[in-house]
Image (cartoon, rainbow, N blue to C red; front, side, top):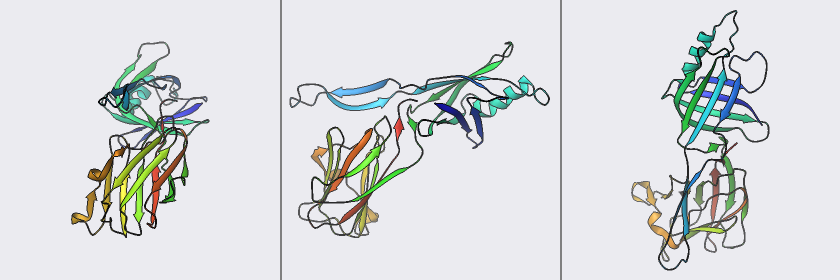
Length: 282
């Protein structure tokens, strides 16, 4: 259950809104727009090899969160008008805000957006203010960075377990350290179906040892880069070396993900996986 909402404005000032308690200046009357949103699916046909629509991608809809806050001043030092005007430090239309939802049954999550409107009921017997916030990215994010580490192996059955508690699948940043030269590496995640991304530098020439590489499978921010003094400018994009037969950018899914990085026998590589957990609703 949600116990508190923290609102941070673009100056870093935090407004704490407990959902229960006595003597609250801004009691939370209602919050809408927290449930799972509607997804936009992208499906199409790839020639004659497939007999049905093939799922190509997804995009979460933007989220509209509406807060209804009561206005209950301490009349010894405040008025309804003074505390209402104080709220405009966070909720002036077009202002950027970050919302943090604290719960007693799940991780604390965050979402960011812009204030669409802040409508006060000035002449009501029990005055309040209704605030509408538009969040272009409609997912809630656990801000705690998760990591997992392993070593590359030629064994196709050796995997590490990567736990993912989020309800919306997400990509990751894979940081690889090459101790020895390497011809290729194959990233595989077997959660419900095998998702494989194979990067083959050359069948005859190795990527240099004592180098690093980074692969991001995060939707909207995908890249694969090798970093070495051997490359002009110190880095080389690996996108053109992706094997067309294994070009699925793996994503983490809810539950235990069985993850591996496969290399040729005798090659030495270690890796660290970094990711955030996303939630589709509270």
